[in-house]
Amino acid sequence: MKIDFANLQLQYQKYKSGIDASIQTVLNKSNYIMGEEVKQLEAELSTFTSAKHAITCSNGTDALLLALMAMDIQPSDEIITTPFTFISTAETIASMKAKPVFVDIESDTFNIDANLIEAAITDKTKAIMPVSLFGQPADMNAIQAVAEKYHLKVIIDGAQSFGSTYNGKTDSNLGDISTTSFFPSKPLGCYGDGGAVFTNNNEYAEKIKMIRVHGQNKRYHYKYIGMGGRLDTIQAAILLAKLPHYKKELVERENVAKKYKDLIKKNLKIPVIKSNRTTSWGQYTLRINDRDEVQKKLNDKGIPTAIYYPVPLHLQACFKYLNYKENDLPVAEESSSCVLSLPMNAYLSDDNISYITKTLNRILK
Ligand SMILES: Cc1ncc(COP(=O)(O)O)c(C=O)c1O
Picture 1 (cartoon, rainbow, N blue to C red):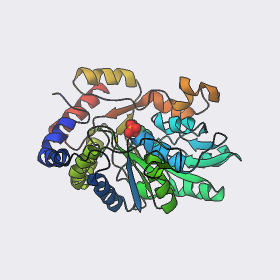
Picture 2 (picture 1 turned 90 degrees about the horizontal axis):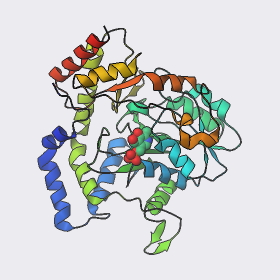
Picture 3 (picture 1 turned 45 degrees about the vertical axis):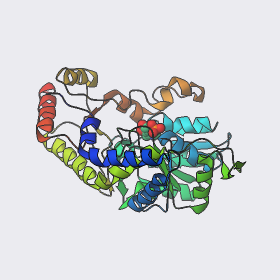
Picture 4 (picture 1 turned 180 degrees about the horizontal axis):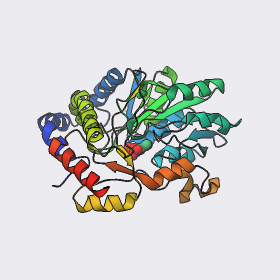
């Protein structure tokens, strides 16, 4: 049996008529840049998340940059974040010439350990940037409490978690600014690059809309230094065709996770989702000893897996100048050595899941 990790082919076949019609509408109108589909999508994203403002943009990395630029982050500023994430989280902080300050993670959720944040705060700290890793929001109540105590801003990197909730609120509707990515393999993906920024703050929203278009407040008048950070109208049209199916897809992803839980060997460390949270199941990530060997054996049986992430950010060459060394953040480092993500998408059949879990259990025997 051949298993697909994200199965974008099958996804397109399922929604083909809606997606094709939506793209065709844009082609007929030739409104490729900031067409009305972009506005319509932003309205629908705002309704879906309950965030007051949803501002689409070029990708999840630029979404983070837009958030940092809107907050006017300066080179002397420090931002506390997690080392166990995709590079964009800390890359964007460094792109602003600010300093990423890494705090270790919880071993069960892989998210930033909120109990360790206070000790990392200095008089230069301006913001905390938690990531809703693999789809599950971090401990936002605890993070918000530290942020309020020290007058810090909170930016949530929700690239993997569109639609996930914490105490019943989507993580797009938490923090000062929240972001997401519509990269094709993300839980809600477009068919190219895309992203969005969410906020309930009117001033941030106005500024982000300007910065997204080169800081322009009036045609050829520029209030801020900005960027070319718009979402293409065609990508907005694709997302408009997919969004109505997304709630159902979240349920289907949850069902896949439930079946994995039931069928995977009982002594294996499967994902832990806290009772006050839901996850979009951006990834289904196990902790496995002899991870590399297990990955190779699964691959030989036609089961693709992924390692998110093999090296934590504090030990990456590009952050050498921050002077972290091995054992500084032991939970993140240990996690990097044993994580393995199984195929996760809404279209895995019972046969697929049975084959994946049986093969895995046999390898681990
Ligand atoms: C946690 C995290 N942040 C940011 C990004 C960046 O998103 P994009 O690839 O759309 O720029 C990603 C994408 O993989 C991500 O996983």
